[in-house]
Length: 52
Image 1 (cartoon, rainbow, N blue to C red):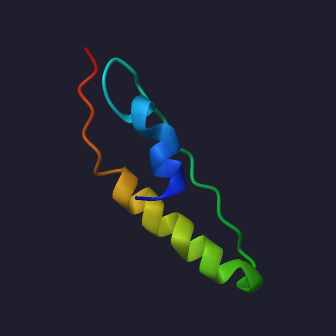
Image 2 (cartoon, rainbow, N blue to C red):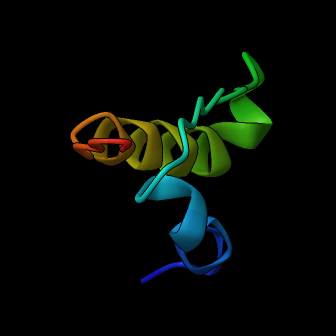
């Protein structure tokens, strides 16, 4: 479980609606961080939330 997931725990369920924007860099120097961000965004899009 990542730090970001823990921070967003209450926002990812219950009575809230959440929008996550993943920003990435076109720079080759940021490749590792970009891939990590894309991986997180891919996993986050599969979260099912049923706000009441």
